[in-house]
Length: 167
Image (cartoon, rainbow, N blue to C red):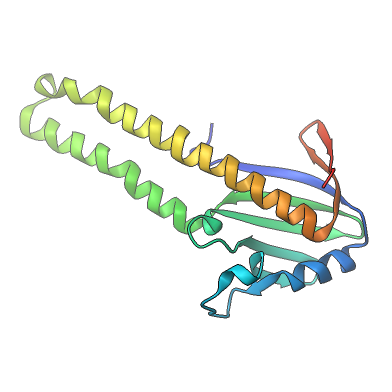
């Protein structure tokens, strides 16, 4: 199991990739621009030819997941992963209890510090499975739904499962 989740999909588009990219460009604000009202566009990111890397434009949670895609004619490969900035932030949050536990062990010895093993492990487990995993699932699903509506995804295939998009 990886610390930070990611998803990979094979997608089939309703239209050609050029039409899908055109629709995505209308809904995407460039990464290079600084605009105070991000909510006018659905995505923020960069589009180069038939490849793009976008994130949702929602201020609080939109940057949590990055959607990267490479398209060819009417098919493509989509990868959804956690943003690098959020990965750094969560690594720092993971290190806090470990550093604290290490300091307590050095000061008091391992025998006197055994009461802190369970809270330290629980902190890490809750951070990983509640905040990161649950947040990733909700935000990636929302991002995939909006991307499907924007570029016109007909079928989404993850692993051995194929989903027909009804959006």
